[in-house]
Length: 340
Image 1 (cartoon, rainbow, N blue to C red):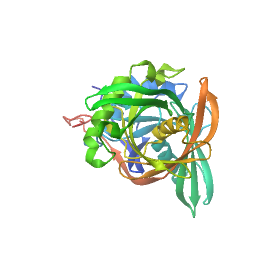
Image 2: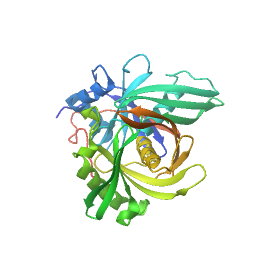
Image 3: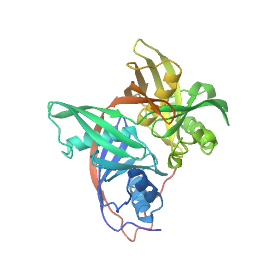
Image 4: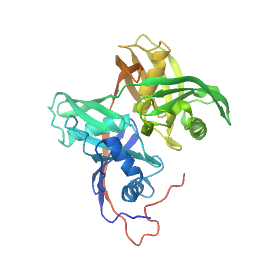
């Protein structure tokens, strides 16, 4: 196994409770002409894998850790690029990470911002170009609005057998592919008390659909596969739009503490297809820990030969700390371990 030899510095944020670890120094070079190309390189690089493992594994991380490597953008139209990573590898999208990166870029001065007003932080991610609109007041970041790539439905009511019984999954894209399942259909609620059962169902649905025709990106096979299962509860329809609670179980059993940024975009595509959410309406999307994103459709577009939706998701990220990690060459645990 390749082992990192130098120190790695990070700045940690959380967005609505979900961690995001930003690597600021010590990562290996990750070549490629686009961020999606760089992701492909990272997936096969022992050097990059070793640093990812060092930062996500115990004792420096945990099974639900999340973070990103900063890389050059695809062109001068973006401020920087990012490769998102988790305990099982590299994802194609991450809304909560984009929100954290927007706050970090303004807080550190990487992207200059006025003390009052909005500043756009433009990011290239594997799924495309996204924007974090950072709102400041009194010299402090108060809110970040994540503008995503187009979202759209891939399949509706796909039958899936699970050990908890049969379910119907709606498959949609929001920078990554998600399967949405109503939690009540397997006798569960989106609460911490059902945490273990929700993980189990989420994993079963993901792997049942991951290699099927419903989990294929219309134009780029590198974006194939079900990234996560969104188990949701409907909390009613208000004058402004629907109110739902969800937990997203992504990768192989990792739990998003936030309402999930790219997953919220994927949910919007389904709700719009149901006629419950149109341009100007708002989805209040709560998480398993009762944090909230406010999300809306801002435009309809034609993408991949179908109707796509441009979405915006409001949230906030907070600094939790900084650290410099290293690996003692005599440490028998190497880059670490995970108990789950």
